[in-house]
Amino acid sequence: MEKEMTVGKAEEKTIPDSVSRILDRVKAVFEKTPRIYEIFKNCYTNTLHKAVRYMEDGTAYVVTGDIPAMWLRDSAAQLRPYLIPAREDKEIADILVAVSHRQLQYICIDPYANAFNSEPNGNCWEKDETEMNDWLWERKYEIDSLCYPIQFAYLIWKNTGRTDQFDEIFAEGAGKILKVFRTEQYHEEKSAYRFIRRNSYYTDTLSRDGMGALVRSGTGMTWSGFRPSDDACTYGYLVPSNMFAVVVLGYLKEIAEEIWKDEKLAAEASRLRDEIYEGIETYAVTRREGYGEVYAYEVDGYGQFNLMDDANVPSLLSMGYLGYEGRSRLTAENTRKLILSEANPFYYRGKKASGIGSPHTPVGYIWHIALCMQGLTAKSEEEKREMIDLAASTDGGKMLMHEGFHADDDTKYTREWFSWANAMFSELVMDYCGYRIER
Image 1 (cartoon, rainbow, N blue to C red):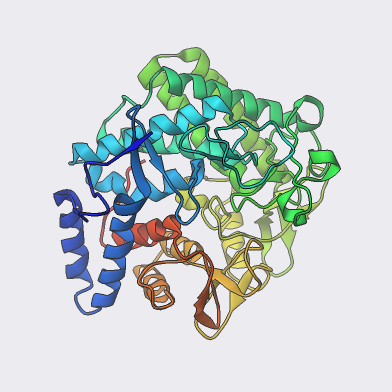
Image 2: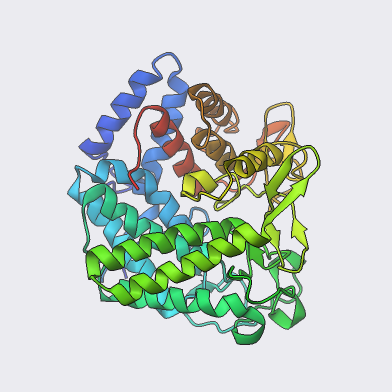
């Protein structure tokens, strides 16, 4: 059961002092553009006021926005900007740890699921043909759903010094994550995961009786059924998510060494990280005329590849943000140039904005998450500010971010309340103001 939070209750709209100090600093930086500050304030306080709910077991549940479920991915991304005030505010740090505990509880229930209910009530998006149980809102297997909780717990440690999130449940969940990643390196031979959604779009189900498109086993990379957009992968080796796995396996190695003194687990995480890294650098690099060597978004290990990028994170645009470093800096730079151009089929130009969208939303719709990620990965302060201004000017007059908006008319948008987008805008503004998340 849920119970009221002691911080930021919706009805009281209380703002902790640690957050108020950040608001004051942002207000000063944007003194000449007060509307940006007001949007930031709305976005930054939104999650504490509306999305986080303490549970009777001491964990915390985070709704994604206008869908009443908790996504492993979204919940970590939604709370990431609060790592800054958590350094000095134990109450906020307690919330982050409580969310981390619930994330790992969910992984222990089913590491193949992406979204969960607050209790085993049987609520779900659809009655899908897969191994459902009453805790699961949806069971689309996505690599990033297992990466985000490790990243989140690690960042709590690095930014607050807290280690109580690394309990027995976390250790059990980490073992399940390693087992799934290992199994899905040989999806064809070893995986029992299947997913079928009847009478739906092809992007909402997997082909071949729920197995997904054929991939070559033994590449080193690990298979994903779905993208972080919750759309089905065209080819099963989703490159940005494998990049994310490389990063978080490095985190898990460090946790095993420094916190648990577990040399066996550290060695296992390290071996798997190296195998996935070699797979990416061997199979995911291709050439595109006019751009040179670039990373593909998806590959199958047989030579087929998908050149694109999606607004949802992990994305190719976000590889530096996530901490992935490939063998060639030039390949990464070439990839950025490609995906921020019409060579990316989901890059749109319009009267109000230019940016990356997603096949998850209508053609011509740009995502605020992608605009913010472009700013967070920009090398210049000028480009960061340009992306802040662009995001703020395309809010559809709602003073909050949205999922996608039409490139010609930002009053046409998807998702009335999308907390992840609000968090991304908050993080970009804070980054511009000099706040950096340690990792």
